[in-house]
Image (tube, rainbow, N blue to C red; front, side, top):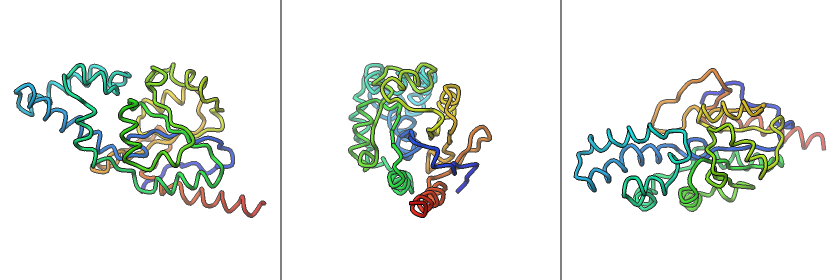
Length: 235
């Protein structure tokens, strides 16, 4: 577990915005899907070797990385001639919640914090993952960037999001594993940002000095417990 300046001022935080893939859910599913499963199925459909299919797809991924189309199930279904949602269901057993996430979400609820999922995932992918996990029962709201037509990487995202979910950036925490997304949130005025260093459980943790960071949510539980105890003591 790695922690770098994790939030301790919970009484000054009203709302916690949380990314999904790589933050609450293990990114291994998505990495395996896009880097292994889709190239294999695409190669089978086109008569290409796995290596040739993967090389072609990696180039196509890079071309639109960070845009809403990159996250769009319908876009890739059209582009590749594959039923992407059906392919996701072929490996849906790999969808998994990161350790300590339910405890963290319940600790936030005990302190009366609003918990909002903010994801770039397409609505079809989002529905599949909420079907396969207990996340929905621990959240006050779920928003897909596709609802707004703007990816979280875009400077236009947070103004549009503010219009449907009013919040005070000074009294909000945003947790994400994507540093580009965190930079956009910082530019919008978020005072509290937290990076996730181990989005994929099968990969070694990353490092960043740019943002406060955690390897997993167990790092935040002691601070939340202390805040809860302080609330009880002050009642």
